[in-house]
Length: 310
Image (cartoon, rainbow, N blue to C red; front, side):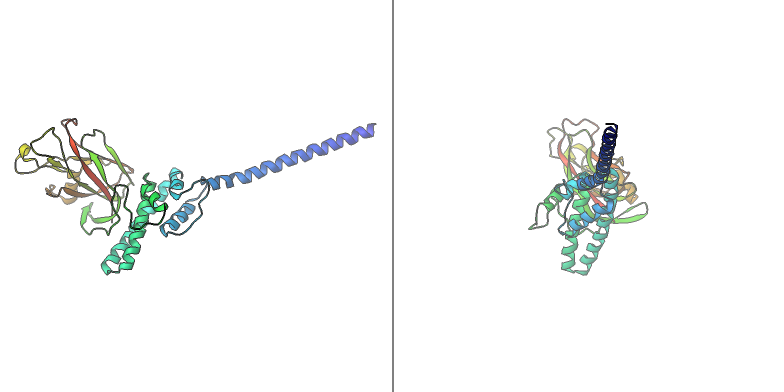
């Protein structure tokens, strides 16, 4: 009987040991599997993984995304903040490089290369905008082949950059790829409107355009643009600088920014389009129509666009 009890105890001990070994194996398997689960969900992807997906998108190549994101745009929007910031910087540099290639192709007159780099630039713009929170154009590109080159959410298209140059901090810049715009800024909105995140120390070109009114039932429609008041019933025949387009981060009126670029007062433009180079402050650029006399009687809107400065 004693021998039987000892055998039973030994048997139970072996079973307990086997049970504990089984639990240990399961725990080890879970530890090994958990990173794989995160990887599938896109939470443990490295920056190079994201870059590979983006490059496939730029080249219009087929690629397999990790689950559960169904689109690259949704995967980018769910990426960690540090990774997104690094990708934003990487995408911007690629846009600059592609823009230069496009300018070279345009100068050589090679239509095949122009079309190729235009398409590449359009896709880089879409990626960069998505990394800044606006994935509308990228989602359009992801939805299927395009019969014509699609524009941004505001209805513009990726065209050959202009060659007009601006100077800031002793350096000459010209417009590269359109990053966002034209964005409408209603004249009766009192709070600055978010436009685009500007990376610290990076140059950009701001374009203000359009006209609006700061008065209720004026004798003439409109009367002011981004920099000047030109309503003759208000100031006579000579337009005056009023600085209606006010930027935040950096905090400056567009008219003052132009003066800093050129070293002289802003000149009135009958087409109501004004451009200036600005350096990012690592913050969201904001803009509004400035009116020191109240906003309830304002009408119309101004528009702002942001371009690469190269």
